Image (cartoon, rainbow, N blue to C red):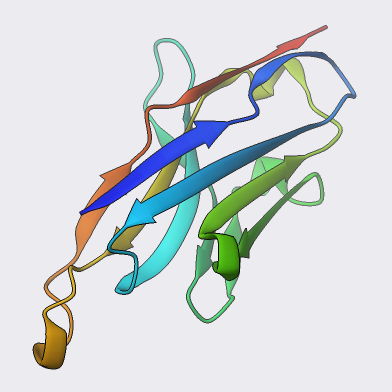
Length: 125
């Protein structure tokens, strides 16, 4: 199992910046993809940014050029640097990791989705 704990959310004015962190613990050896999702009130949860184990990144169109996803493998921590924030970025942000569970010499199990508890980001106009 993988446990995820997010931090770094808060209230910021439009144009400001925040950095979200997601600390992972537990069995992270088989994690293949890590990402950030967000869910605004009355809307579905959708992908904001993702990074694969190989370092390939993907971004939601509306955040390209403003948000940067990164990871520190030594610290088992995922980050989301958010610059030039807009009121429409207001949402609960969730850390997500996709991967299996270590099976020793048999490799990794089928993938699971692991989620953090979410952190609120509020951007005022």
